[in-house]
Length: 142
Image 1 (cartoon, rainbow, N blue to C red):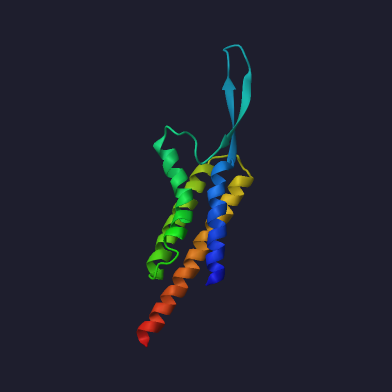
Image 2 (image 1 turned 30 degrees about the horizontal axis):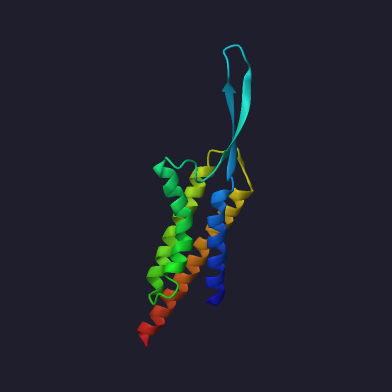
């Protein structure tokens, strides 16, 4: 179980670091004047776009939540509830990353890191939930 805890810490830190990397990029056409040609503008997509938008704060919170949950439930005796909560927050982070990168033309390195870390956190939470539930059933039979 120690390996799972160390991996959860590593991937939650990596996921939190993805807040500062561009996840994807889009190319849009921008017309300056009526007579001018269209200019291609490359726009990089971040999770945290603006401090004035509530949705941007919620997206950033979804990427920070697995790291916060890791430290909040480190010494918790109820493993099934904490694993289910960790799974919920990891799925929320995966949803946010998917929503930021879905309509983009190109996924950048930050996007690949965010996908890898969030999918890894989901898998680790599922493994922890499965082992905790199996341990619970063994102790209940005894």
